[in-house]
Length: 325
Ligand SMILES: Cc1ncc(COP(=O)(O)O)c(C=O)c1O
Image (cartoon, rainbow, N blue to C red):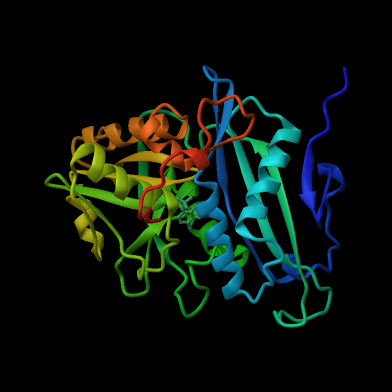
């Protein structure tokens, strides 16, 4: 039996994924002049529904990234959301799925200038399970690489070229036998993981780095700040974190669309807390997955059901007055 065709949205059309290709002279390929998002779709076996988690917020952030990179917003946030739902329906996955939309500079001139350089778009979907494998927690290294600064490549824009920095830091950590790394800003304060934000727990308070510390302003990070206070009664604080504070944290975890919630059990070979995933990290991890999979009605407004099997629709759910990222 032949495999069903997988489609991508590419240059304004839905086309078979194998036909969604760019020329090697494409500006984004030559110079990294593209921005992107990573969105997760959670398959719920019980409701036979696919829930896209906080899709709107992802496209709002992509609009911000595009603005920084002088990209014309050919589609509105609503149109991006509609195109994404349509694409997921066409590919019809019944497993957890990763959705990658991107806006990229598609001119073919030599030279990295962003002006007089057209913008094209793509969206593809791919089956995607856990980013980190194993339930035991992560061994993490402070990277010798520094996070790109706001005045070099702004981290709040999800710019493809900046991920060379990510790749260097992540690769060194893996080659040194760690699972992941934390990068510092040039000022020596903690920034974030290679592609995830970081939280530490100290005396029952959740602490994460501020948005001015060259981090991507994570949607998962905002989700945790909101839920931890509301559901677990935990105070959350955003402030600068020194490297050595990590060595004495009671608990630590990464968060991100890909990473989801990933407890950290050692940092620079020092155990974090007891050296096992901590109780607060574990609670947040469980709650987060339940919310993403549509099992917590209070947070249904964060989900877009794709196949129309659910008993709720996002527009009929009350929206909170503020939903920080
Ligand atoms: C550099 C970086 N930081 C943080 C995150 C986490 O952001 P979010 O929670 O919006 O996925 C990501 C992943 O998208 C990332 O690439």
